[in-house]
Image 1 (cartoon, rainbow, N blue to C red):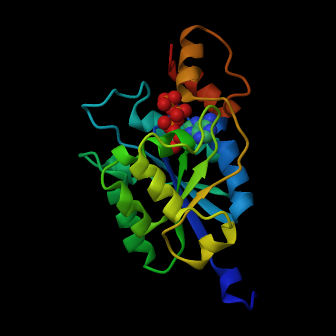
Image 2: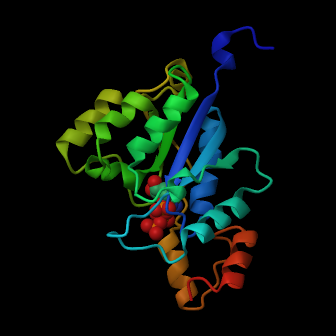
Amino acid sequence: MPTNPQSATILHALFGGTFDPIHYGHLRPVEALAAEVGLNQVTLLPNHVPPHRPQPEANAQQRLKMVELAIANNPLFAVDDRELHRTAPSYTIETLENVRKERGPTLPLAFIIGQDSLLTLHKWHRWQALLDICHLLVLARPGYNDQMDTPELQQWLERHRVTDAALLSQRPQGHIYLADTPLLEISATEIRQRRHQGISCDDLLPRSVQRYIELQGLYR
Ligand code: ATP
């Protein structure tokens, strides 16, 4: 048993996405992030896409199934389908508030986003309140850097950014950490386009997910 209480702290992270479909650009950087900052559990949160927004090609049940197949046998990952069960779309901040309530106020909790999402974070509902609930862990993504378009977002980032990952497990929330994760030039858009054109998607996503896509006739 660890004697230092800090070494016993569990840093748990959530990772939201449309996952239409889930791919190695989601999985590999998150695995590297887990090793970099000491995450022992990452819960994938497939998003409910509101009707007024462009709809995913796969339905909610198919997106959930693909996530389940992708993480089967990988104990780092779990899936939480709470957003898919809601009749009304929920904002990320509301989902995170609920998770925080369930986990209690002291557990270090993090939310993972890609670098592209960070650049548009100021468009999210109550974006600044995210840090009242959790840390933000940012995955590197090819083609994006940490120069924000809006000074407000840039200043917020500089104010809350830490470069020492050890600080993350010492507080329940409030830091932003830009991770040095591998750059994978993969997007769900590219996978859907390749499928539409009949081009192979080998190496872009797990075999089990590819087989499911074939069986369901997705992204034709
Ligand atoms: P689409 O191409 O349909 O927009 P996507 O591939 O970006 O989809 P999402 O499900 O929208 O996937 O992304 C969920 C999260 O994963 C987002 O925060 C996004 O920034 C991040 N992400 C997706 N692909 C990558 C990648 N290759 N590297 C790092 N982060 C990624």
